[in-house]
Image (cartoon, rainbow, N blue to C red; front, top):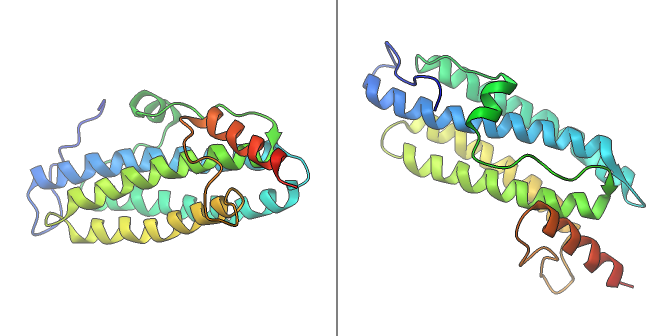
Length: 191
C-alpha cells in the first residue's frame, strides 16, 4: 500500500500494530466501497432497455447505502488513529480489481456484471471480517453490518438473473463482460 497504516495512537485495548493492521484492511474496504458507489451510479446512468426504470430506480437506494458505508468506514479508520484517503488517485493506485468495463448496455447485461462486482466486494468484506476476529470486534461488527446490506443488494440483482429453477444465468461466467453477455444471452432465450 502506498500510505503508511501505522498510527501514532489507536483505541484503548489495541496496540498500534493491531490498529495499523485493521486500518490497512479498512483502507481497502474504503476503496472497494467508493468504487462500488461510483460503479452503481455509472450503471444507473447507462442502463437502457425494457427494464430500464426498474434497474434505474433500484440502484439509487443502493448508492445511498453504500455511500453511508463509505463514511462509516472512513470514520472508523480515523477512530483507530489512521487517516482515511478517499481520493480517486489512491483508489486506482491501490485497488486489486479491474475497472468496471460495461458502458451503455441493456439492463440485464449490467445486472450480470454487477453480480460479479458484488461477489468480489462481498468476498473481500468476508475476508476482512475473518481477519479482524479477535483483534477488533468493533470493526468486525461494522463490516458484518455492511455485509447484511451488500448481500441483500446482490440478491436484488440476482433476482433478475435467476431462473425459476434457481440457477443464475451468470453461473459459470468469468469476469464482468462475460457475465453480462451470459445474462443477456439467457434473457434472449427466455420466452
